[in-house]
Length: 278
Image 1 (cartoon, helix red, strand yellow):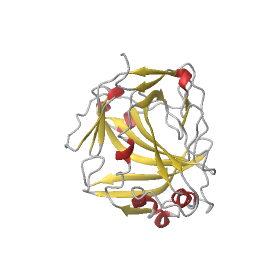
Image 2 (cartoon, one colour):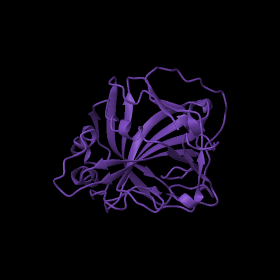
Image 3 (spheres, helix red, strand yellow):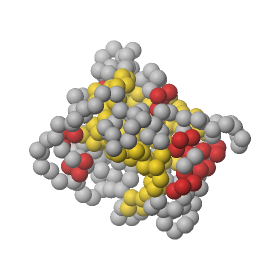
Image 4 (cartoon, one colour):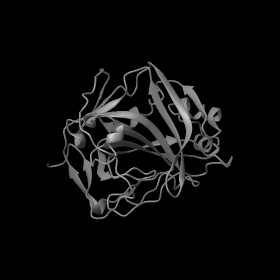
């Protein structure tokens, strides 16, 4: 498995495909799931290219936001970029299609041992950072939600280590030190545009998981190729408590915003590695 980090600027080619987004609840490829060894096969893919994620240019905006479905509202912390070339990825399980970054969202739970949405062979983690991308072949993100290959999620698992007083992860401080500025639901703040530098450590890992799934917020469109790093990012108690200290629309702390795990439904999970036979 090879992940190649690139900083070149590319202009995506837009398709003239006309389509509409799907409606209603999906049926068989829901996310998140447990990445169980018994359902995982090793696979070799071409390199996965990541470009423009660590640029110092432009502006990064962090927002305390919410997404509403027919039955519930999910509260999220998201980060978007403007005034710069957007990050994008291709290769690996994505083939030659280019997937453009739209935002990164964080998911956590009330318990430090059960907050990430995905788990690895029954082992749970504290938090999960999910980078959402759309397939530029379809021309716009709105046209991607009813396509099985319309979206791609690049996901990183995080774990609280130590006890209160343990130093923060400095790479994540660009984000967590600014959460106090968006305590109110709907508020935003500007942060350093190189706020994704913490991803570099996880990109040094050997291999990643991938499987076909869905969005984990309403209406749960089944349009996602998930790519999940097995390298766990360490965070402090203070840093995760900064997320839990945010308020929802009713001025209550957002103690959790993770979705419960879904059934695998005979799907095959792939672990992408250069050691795989094929």
